[in-house]
Amino acid sequence: MRYLFLTAAALALSALLGYAFSRLVFRCGKAGRAKRILAGLLAAILLFSAAGLAYLGVYSRAADEAMRALEGSGSVTVKKLEGGYLFDGPGDEKAIVFYPGGKVQTEAYASLMLLLAEGGTDCFLADMPFRIAFFRINAADSFISGAYDGWFVMGHSLGGFAASSYASSHPDGLRGIILLASYPVKELSDKLCLLSVYGSEDGILEMDEYEKGRGYWPSDSAEAVIQGGNHARFGSYGIQKGDGEAAISEREQQEETARVIAEWLEEH
Image: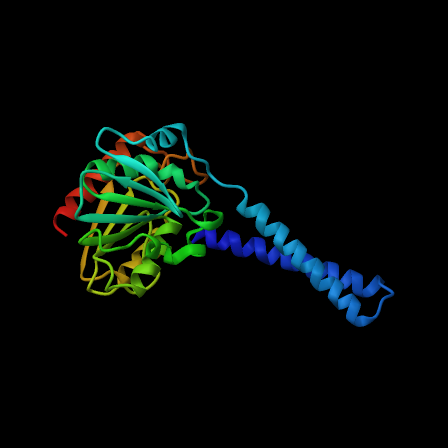
């Protein structure tokens, strides 16, 4: 929820500046009242847009190892699609649509997607407008088809909020949802199954909100804690401000995450 707060704060600040500017125009301008109001509204819109673009333009970039994962491996072919990527591995029964974390470059999750695909579950990594998943909550619709027997949505942090929102409104088209350092924001149908994974050293995940989110879990839910893991290392984008210090490497956290997910998927 921290990203939502920061976004709201940036927009509120720009609106306040726009209002102040409009009052200045109103007091000092010699034009008619209607023209002064119009000028103030225009100023507010410009300031609002500038503040929003400045905020959204700063994001965490994918590390080199993540970019290399886009080359695939001996068992996985990576294909660039309209609106994302497909990590096409040896599996042909189940597939995951992944929603990236807020203000994180899409490709930062390529390493984890590659591991999951190598383990037998094809993965669709979705691009998000301005790297904010809530701008494309229905991203899964672009990938879900009859090519697989079971579809799952999965998201990290803010991407998990968006994925859970999608799952809440599409229970008949999915088998389940996987959340990484996240929690549902809406009630999930008992038609779905859920796996929640987070790191023991996570300094970003708000645990009080996480506990409240349990009330939205479906009856078939499971939880796994990656010992020594933190918030950022589900992806490959470096250190995240406010996060805890991980006791395991990024590779170890992603390998353990992929193992936990693969074992859970075998049962679902």
